Image (cartoon, rainbow, N blue to C red):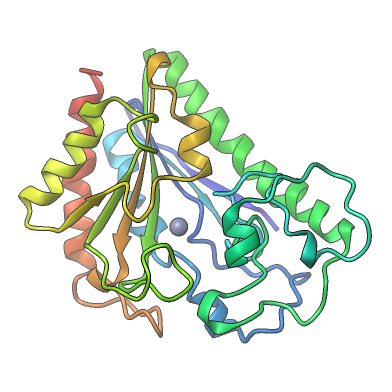
Length: 279
Ligand SMILES: [Zn+2]
């Protein structure tokens, strides 16, 4: 299957690149998971690709994954391997993060958080390799190519890494079983973009009456870490939208707030297009 889709602007390009690594919902035949599909689908950032589809009208490009993040997660490093999930010898590099070892949500998820283990088997090293080479790398290569091209054209680029989050944490998450704000905006503690970009996003959302948290409980993961180099004119910001604003979290169906959420994001994209020339 095609692992990644790229939606390009119809007319004038702007130095804006958005990516949605977790909204894919085409489950590869080789997945062979134990947990039921509907439960598994609660890990998707459902509809985020659609919520940001408008960016092409503002000169932006949207790169989005077609495969599910629970199959292999583009927002983890390639070596964030869970060895407890691999049968036999894994010969590639391993640098397992806390999310992998403690929570089972590394490059390839072991656990569906509060819902239990994803597999009733271990994965063969060839399966893991196939996911990295057939899905993870094509996603990263496609995104890097688009960001590099925009940076070459303008000398600067704004990259927004787009996500959604459950409305509540649980016992397995960083924040515990508490309600989450409407948005969490993350720049890895001021390291992945100019302060003006973070301020622009936070001010616009708060100005529209939303609750916004910065770098808490999420600091920003692999995609902004990889692409955010503000000293080189590469500005990356992670945006998490609370799913309760636009969808039913159990069925994934859209709620009445869906179109309002898109309208807010359109205003945000417009503001970012104006900001880009000043960075
Ligand atoms: Zn996500």
